[in-house]
Image (cartoon, rainbow, N blue to C red; front, side, top):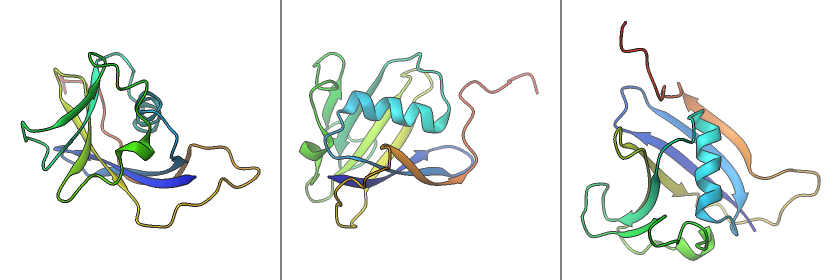
Amino acid sequence: MIWIIKIEVMYFEEPWSVTIELDSETVLDDLHRMIQAAVGFDNDHMYEFYISRNERSERRTVFDDNNGLLYTTRLKSIYPLGIGNKFYYLFDYGDDWLFKISKSRKKEQPAKEGITYPRIMSEVGSKPEQYPNWDE
């Protein structure tokens, strides 16, 4: 089934978000690659996904390379998140690029013939720059 998700960068001076249609069978490693392509970052750092009440909570369910869950966990097994929980993507443990991922409440739909998924539906704001020129 096709879901709509919104990905928002957090703690950046300008808001940026992208809304994507994708298959609910998508594994987290593929979602990572979709986010990297959407934001225009180089895929050159470690990353993880996690579920917690807020982005700073130490009580979290982590999906990372150490536990191998990036390659086996599908989006459809993440949702529903549970009351009060949110879903996050953390990229680059040095620069700590943090994104919040929200699933739309719109009813899931079967894939439409002739459409290639994932598909960017909309983008708002200016993309953050992964390696800004610090000399300016």
